[in-house]
Length: 469
Image 1 (cartoon, helix red, strand yellow):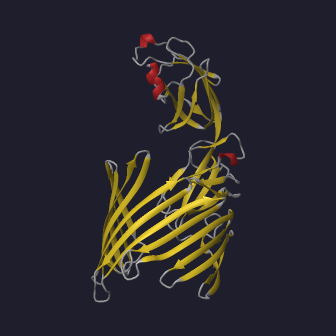
Image 2 (cartoon, one colour):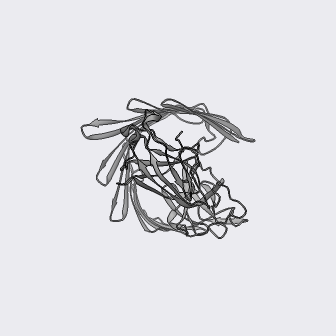
């Protein structure tokens, strides 16, 4: 059982979370993050009770407290990022650990180089000896002709074996979307040994396959083959599904895409499912195409990171269909399938003629269309003769206004048509082309003597002398 609460105070954000493992123990954690001037900072406090164990708290930990800060030093046109962190931990055996980290990085063209200084001290206890360790790590990354090169070296600055500790160079090559090739050369100074390894991985629909082989300078030879798959509930077809992704460690979304004929955002019994629609999550495109029942599963969502789930409009079979919203933001949880409905609405058009307060055509004005929640769903700019056209407008009720910047420069009121305007502004099955006719801007002063009545022609019905609110 777990829970969390977050609160923001200006530039400071605080999060308090806790978890209890039945029959084992509990853990409580307090995190803060904020900004002061050019410095970002954060604090962390974690306290463990009993034998609670997770990837964030091992069973030996009593408590841990830390502070971190980062900034960027300006050296002319060059910026040097600096990160510093200090952590104090106490273990259940009574020993204490103090750790200090200092990190920086430099980008030069396609090459990124990072350096980290790590100093750690641990006090003695009944079961452990006191120790002190200072290390410097260097890491370099680059891409060259489709290859990703990564070099890493660690140096010891204290102890009996000062100098180079380990060094390795790794090469990764993406053969295609589902297969990768890796090579690695590693040197271990303590044993004076080289290790050369190569690996190949392939992802299939139901499982992933990985093979590795290595040889060492001391005559060691080895190879292995791994087959990995996950079992979990299938929210689309029912029953159990088999997947190559780690279902228990990542989030998933079960998405239903349907045609929203009445524009209410809820699927009715007579509204059809849409198949062969590509579902997207964040900046990555998945192979999650909807089936006959309009449903698809999006896997590999990073836990605890909000992501926007939507559809690729180009895969909608009907060119007059459009998403009712840009998508739905969810926060994935490990091993949890979140149910989402994405309505696709038939669309129409809204056209009109914009006039200035004197009744002359008004070109070059940005016009915005808003839904009843106040979100801008479309915009356009009036043409040389004042004509404007909004296309692919999903069914629903809307407001029409002049963009804030344009209204300020022209000294006119923003609102053109609101929900209170006589006749309203609706796009639906019976009226999918709305012709507003001439719309006269009103002076920002709001003086009725300076403004003439507005005439709105919506479809075949005309609403005359309808004053703006």
